[in-house]
Length: 257
Ligand SMILES: [Zn+2]
Ligand SMILES: [Zn+2]
Image (tube, rainbow, N blue to C red; front, side):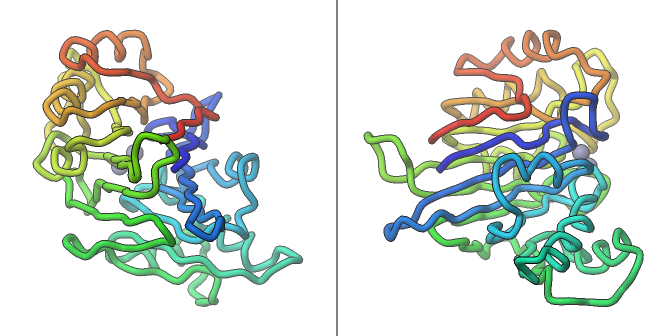
């Protein structure tokens, strides 16, 4: 699998990055490339076109319905509906209510075929070509899911690889479950320990380090830093507990697993 960071700004887009959006690509045994997009936050659709044509997206996986994770579904709907090579369709997996959220964002409720929505169900994996997605409920002010994404490895030494994605969450059992033994753990860190963050909303950098270390993740990519956050302070705090390979996400970051 190949992971590309399209957008990694937390809460709102920043001067250098759209809000949350990650592209996962995997080739099946016949050589066809499958494309899965994790979240479509504000500003993501423009940057996504640097890495693929949105007509080629097989599925979109939405962690939750805050605008920094789903706002550009409206633009995706327009792109798929009006592109001269279309109309095209894609599948959107998300929390219950995703279809009506898309209507709200579009400002109209005329359903067309461009986006077909399915509600996440924990315990029921979703398959997108050679990629399998399992979700766990996590702790956030709205229904939210973390994802465990398994697919073919492109490293010679192994057959499959796991990318774990936190979405937005505080520390919880679901987050620990998706992260367990992941090759790449893409985890938000919206606060520092010193921020006196409200409980049940976001995870602190200190706790990201603890969770990733306990989960024995090979590589940790810390993401969803708001434009006002200090990446260096975040890195120091995560590193107080985590001993593996550590990166702060940046747009265009490309990881092969
Ligand atoms: Zn967010
Ligand atoms: Zn959120």
